[in-house]
Length: 399
Image: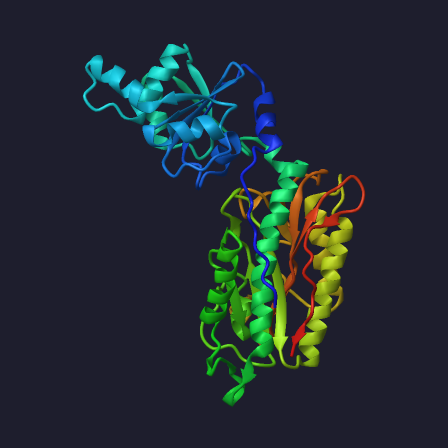
């Protein structure tokens, strides 16, 4: 099977500029690294592994970075005024502060600009907030999305998500190919290259293909049989013929930081009639959900449509012998710089869908006596019909 590779290069997303259209009276402050903090990456558009300062004051954007990052920041974050952390530290040493750290530097920067109040993300470090408040600087955490604009993607962002989704599809194609050539051994165990095919081995095949496509895979799910009834179980041990295997792949692009997400359920060999019915019910539920993914539709209504359909088809949800079975997770979630972001499509989710949002559509049914089935595609909400960004086909049996 031909392997697809990617050579993406970070390009400043148009949304970065929309970040700075917020009320100019607000002083926005983030102190975090942009490797793990999606808001910081969204604000500055470059990866920095250690915490640094981002400040928006009077419509102008500042970042304070170490000498290690300063030249790269000047190239990659041109919409920001780049300030030197070491220069501020030297200045503070000259004023008698022996070991000035990021707290002292931040207080000095705020003092210079006569800033007495800042708006921070809800995840802002508690200790740092306390240090600022001791200096009579008001710290106001913003509930909800720090940058509401992140919810609705631009065309450039959609391309980045699509590229990350292609990485996921590369991994999926490799997995399907391995299952295709695997032999059925004693007791129904799958054999690959004269050794048992395990969840761990198939996950390694998937993750390696994604790395070669310039992505990073983490906690890829390869869960066979009853293991698939725990939706977040990564899977372990030998895989077997004639039982469902859930493959859930959600890599992050190393170039852009955006995620892709795809799930397929396959059977190597022959699926029982019960599994076939389960699979086609989930597939039909996914189609119903897609038809609901339109601007103005309540997010909870999308989930309710699927849930009620499953109930009508006889697939009940609830506890049985002490464990959940049926459809007991949300129908989908937003996708972007985080694998799970706003909006959520679940029973208790609030709000309505908007054009430009990118969401997963991933209903599933799980019964220990059968196994689990989940199917997941990624939808772009448009002004009319949703656009399915996922191109990988859906086939239950692999032979």
